[in-house]
Length: 326
Image (cartoon, rainbow, N blue to C red; front, side):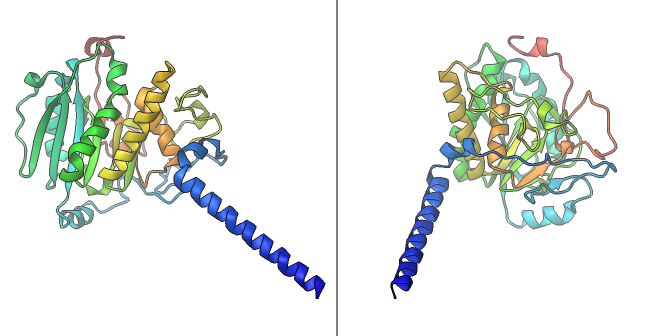
């Protein structure tokens, strides 16, 4: 009898301990995630984008689609989303001499970007008088938001997350379903439609999609909030394209802005400003959809076998001529 009672007490103790542990883990991950996530070591093989046979990878290890030409039916997907009567907000920053890129950006977008959908462009600029007159299609509109100038191009990129966060909170939660933040020094060359929509969307940078992660230009200083160890990382994401549901992009912008502020208080500027913080965010908050380099190419790069179509590309420019400082 004593033996049975001892076993019973032991089982009760173990049960209480396990329950307590589960409760602690739940609360830690639910309410203290930001504090513990930097302690998690994600040691696993780097996912590939293009296989040894030259075939592209169409899904991430966490089962998010990687969108390539030939992996979707654009007519079918667009038809499904058009029935939902959605609005896609699109933020663009054109400060200083970057207003030079607005005409090509907007005109090419009207020909290729979510054609047939309601699109609302929100343009941040310090030169509203230089915004070109571009004819917009039915259901499409442009709102110009005047912001202060900056003497440093780095400061412009550092503050984009803050402006995006505030815009979403003040307007987009009421005015849009999805939002994309796109660089203005770009041009659309091919159709970009509803196949790109998802809860949280990132794009693989065209310069690093066949690079080993130890050579990614992540922020490598541990004192920065954007720090990623050499042995960690999935892909290198381009900061020129961020998208998803309004609430999810708001969380990206808010978190990155907070991390940028912490760095700034310590006089630290991440290697690639908000792009570095975006890569840190995506490492611990996996995108639900990943866009292939078709959705962010570079005009100076030669075409490759795996990139069948270039939908969106950064244009060739003289940085010394358009940036306010080297």
